[in-house]
Amino acid sequence: MFTLLENCNLLDTVSGEILPCVSVLIEGSKIKEINEGRLNVSNAVSHDLKGKTLMPGLCDAHVHVTAFDLNLAKLESYSPSYITARSLKIAEDMLKRGFTTVRDAGGADWGLALAIKENIFNCPRLLFCGHALSQTGGHGDLRGRNNDLKHYYSYPELGILGRLCDGATEVRRAARDELRKGATHLKIMASGGVVSPNDPVGNNQFSLEEIRAVVEEAEAAKTYVMAHAYTAESIKRALDCGVRSIEHGNLIDEDALDLLVSKNAFLVPTLATYEMLCRKDSGINLPQELIEKAGDLKEKSITSLEMACSKLAKIAFGTDLLGPFHKYQSLEFILRRQVMTPIEIIRSATTVCAELFNMQGQIGVIAQNAFADLLIIEGNPLEDIKVLLPETNSIKAVMKEGRFIVNNL
Image 1 (spheres, rainbow, N blue to C red):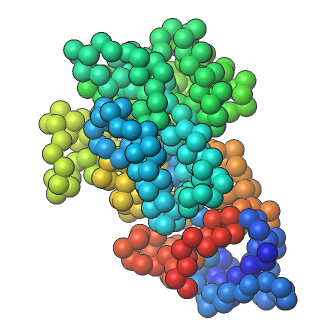
Image 2: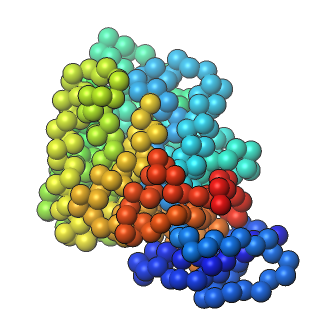
């Protein structure tokens, strides 16, 4: 089946330019041909875009599709079937916002990914780490101090974000097990965090031997490791051991950024999650300790992003939203606009993510043989990034692998 999109202004994410009066021919799930001007294809279903902007589908490199409850410790009490239903609704809404590929950072599994791949549900392409690896008492350990139960953290089910493992041998076994279950990448908790009860943000987590063990297993499986890390020290420890993707990084410094650039690694800031956790009008009553943690990190997030831009670091787009905050995914565009240009933000959500995911040429670009993951927009996002926000109603169509998911042309 052929689909022809005619008379569009094509946003080239590589050059950063708008190319006028372009035609794009789609065959099945892939882009077959791009032509300046008209294409004569007799057996194609044609759509005249009348000068609307055509751009690649967006990517989010840090989501938690199973985290429908802000209290992550409660997730283990829900039925897996209920978690599945809630997760697929969260993912479906992401696709409607224009995100055609997302990378899950803990909680999703091969079953969700397969159901999406088979088009049983209209959701973004789902890359997943399975369960994030955490040391006992680390960011993935959500037990209170009086809870000594360990079974569901050693062998967790769908929805549980973390998996406990201690010592290089146990860590290696856990990494291999997540890869056995289809993980497209691995994740470790390399520092303390906000929503975990017993670990200050400044804590270093996992020994260097343990981190190297995870990296070795990922490299053996031809993939990579992402690391939750806030402080400069925890970031440098992770990078020195071969971690490819640093998540959050709010307390990064220039030395750590220089190391990240020299290692050809990626930074995935997640500004939206701190913004929402700190909003007094969110309607959510959060523990004061959590608000204080998030508030300090929010203040540092823009400074760290500005430093990363000045160092020309590879900055991918991520949000890390939980519970009722998933709907604010596109807020990340506005928050980044404080220090980044529109094309820099768009590249972070397209070409940079594609490179991070090892999917260059397949997503993030409008190019021959790339997936036909496309957005049709009323307006020019290079002039006004706000056209990517759902509330503007500027996204007129969303296409994933050649199929219209949203079509309001």
